[in-house]
Length: 457
Image (cartoon, rainbow, N blue to C red; front, side, top):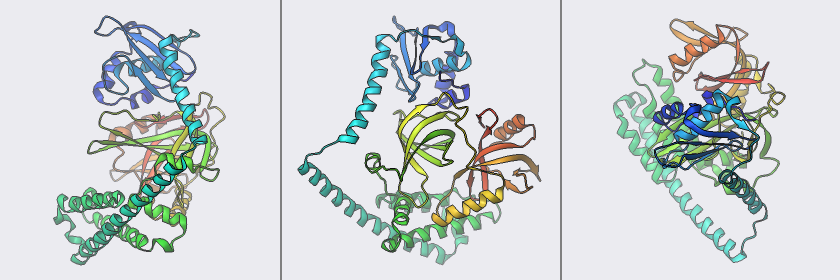
């Protein structure tokens, strides 16, 4: 049976209020009934109305349904039911036939997924319709190309003016100066360039002279990207893909799936090692980092949600997922989408440490090779073995088995530092982490003896 931890359930809460209410409902006496089998967890809980609310959780492809009026996904009832399963799995009755309201829902989900695969594999289009769609697509691409070229020319002039007047004037520019230029890049359909420009507003200009290096590196990366785009046709095909992606091109998932083959597809048991969620305007962006337990391949899965709409393809950090991933074309494949997935409940023999590094130097050598393939590559996950958390002159570092040090990223909070210290007791542990700039951000501890993963919350 699928077994979740409380930490994993906590990650699914859409907000703090839902989490608190969900924990309050993790009381078995508040539920009329709750049951489970291999594919679904369901229960009935008395609400404010006459009839109890019916709550269901798809355990294979994490999804929720509840008859309550809440517009949150998952609602507090779904969270409460999962918390009961995490805290006291023996309390969940098993071996009971699914009632019709459960089997109808879960069967429809299975049939929908299967029919989608069947449609993707055997879709036959009307030739005239296909020809018209191809022409419309080509027209849109040309229009977008013209906008992007205009945006690149404008940003090139802006950047040269910025350097000409001197980077030392950056602290005086103010937030609006960079945001205005970023907005122009959004209008030019070059969202990648917009995000790079916005990065100037993330620089800490009040940290001595440390910002000089960061500002120069950012300016150089933007200039390199602009020059690469202007010379796009001279680059190898996969380099062209990376440049277009960095500029801000989007590839529709259905198009990527249609072009999937053995060269860009990996079927494996994937460990979900970390997640980062941020909100820009009304859009929530969720980054999920995965590690292929047999392939040693890392992957980034991006999920998006507008306002209160639910995330698709929910992934629990610390869970093992049997999945087929399709990678976007790249000189160094990393970002991917889920083609098929199901939770893995027998992970004892699935994990391999072939992607792990013994020292920082070994990791850095691989990182340098990845930068050679994609100079804009950053925020890359790695697994490094036998690391010890140490403090020197009020700054925290991770020390490897060779005695080398790398500083912790400032995003790793004091609470997380003490959590890591409490778990390890100062002893060496194997960590999954993100290398960003010249710092590292720990994600979780991998215990290779029993194949368990502990998130650093």
